[in-house]
Amino acid sequence: MPDDHARRGFRALVHDRTWSMLCELGFSRTFTKGEPIFVLGAPATSVLLLTSGRVEVGCRTEDGDYRLIALRGAGDVIGEVAFEVGGGRTADVFALESCTAFAVPSGTFERVLVDHGVQREVGRYVAAKLQRAGQDSVDMLSQPPLRRIARLMVQLAELADPGHDPRLIPLSQTRLGQVLGLSRSLVANLVAQLRQEGTLSAERSLTVERFDKLRRHAYPTRE
Image (cartoon, rainbow, N blue to C red; front, side):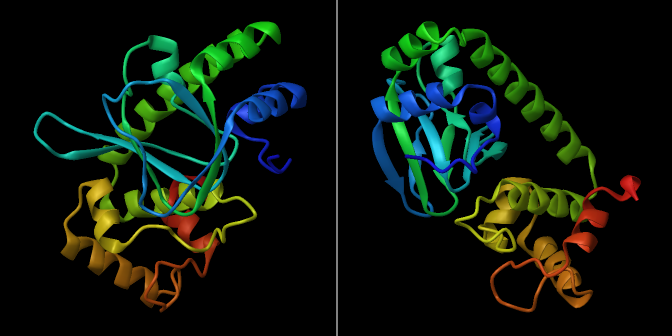
């Protein structure tokens, strides 16, 4: 069964017995770093209750550019948008690190929600996620590159569960540039700046050394 620490996202909106029953009726799944979880347009026959790890939700635009839609962590439900609107998967989802989850057939998911009287919670959860994703996209595109990088790193750190070190950013510099629409050279220069000032460690992997400095870069108006 999932750990009780994952009380965020959808997990925080429903009673313990609802979450536990959904997990018990689902199939245990594990995913490795970089593994595709859902593919855009594929049949949507189940929803995924994420119990550990962080995932990336995105899609390709008409121009072929990749667009990051959202980041999700333990306690979130993945695939619920397709469940609500019907049809196929509405985005690609990749595991950013080792992940564990329970895959619940869509019909079973709906039945439990009805039996437990929490259909409205799902509707509110989906609406809130879509609103947050839209706002995050606008904010990201309107901010300077360094701030965009810092905000993405802060979001990833906040989604880390106890089984994953929040200091470790589960993205390479190349992937960081891809999801933010920034050139590799620009990302390399900004990462070098963050390392030089001590915000990131000197390790090859992206590792946060000073969260206070990182947050100041991400949200300077909060200071």
